Image (cartoon, rainbow, N blue to C red):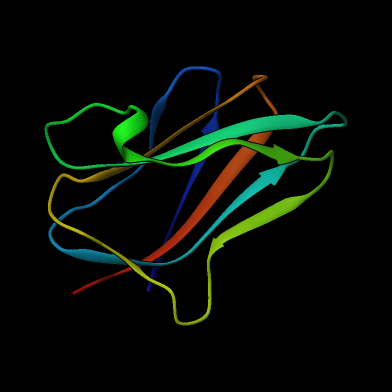
Length: 104
């Protein structure tokens, strides 16, 4: 398995891009700030843009210093080449994302 990390800003941006066919085995959002933050997460097919049709978390509340695990245990999300996970949040310099994935 491989890890990828990214910081989340107020602008929707890639936090993971699939190269080939991959499976996300674990993904966490960590609010490392002193304030509460809202996060949005999207799973976007290659060539598409983030929007309500591919949003998997909307205004997910992350209290100060808290971490939210999106995928864990036996859960997986399968992605084809060029598919992305994108995110944004309500305040810059507050959230980091760690993604664990494997090729399939």
